Length: 358
Image: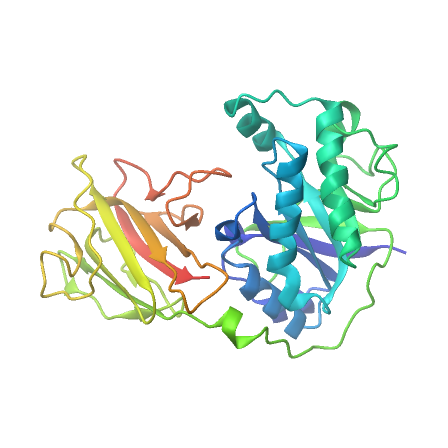
């Protein structure tokens, strides 16, 4: 018996989970976050969890590790468990530890040279904590890491989620095999696709899941852009649409939120970051919007979570270069996991903008 599933994160953007279900997807592994701070929760985690569960798709999760020590891995597990808590009764597939090349890069930048013993120690510490909290736990790895970075004998009690592409079958025994990216209805572009050789959690009927309102209060975002040809375009709310017109360069941007506060700035194509603003008023050229009437090539946004909302939220936003597809999602001004601290590419005008707070 084998089951087909996908794994997703904020980088996959908005997903229509009902369409995913109609494609015959049996399970989903959803990124909960990375690092050891609650601010590093995946900004699409709640949206993906609720969407999958409401569609009747069993879910597991993964946590991308930047641990550099045993205590760091334990902190990551604690943070992960906090993020998972609202869904603890609905997560029926394993919670995976994900340590990859970017994890090693970060460790070396911090002056720590990881080896097989340290990496295995960190994986074991994380997985033991997850299992002790009542979840199934598992380890994600590829062939290189299985051979050189993990002592699989020490992790034998935990199912292996194994990544290996362009082969007919996995070269080592595993519980799940990530075999590459394919097109799946409901997802934009290709999405990581997996085969599971065990059914960790029975398929479920669609469920109504609402985490506690104090933790999951929604933050409304409104925004609009200006282009030379048409002036200010109509306001957009959350991800109901995008702001902009394909093929027409954005020159100015206004963003507002209904709770908390937001700071943002834009970079113009002539090479300058303009001053940061925090207002939402297209008649206030000092603090109501960002821009000076010249084409924008990058945007940086940071959301300030109010004391009334926990866990902390982040602005999750993206832009598209003129007449092309979107760049990856950016979370606040973060510079980990392939993010640049801003959305865009210097020298490339943008024509569409989207933002949400998760």
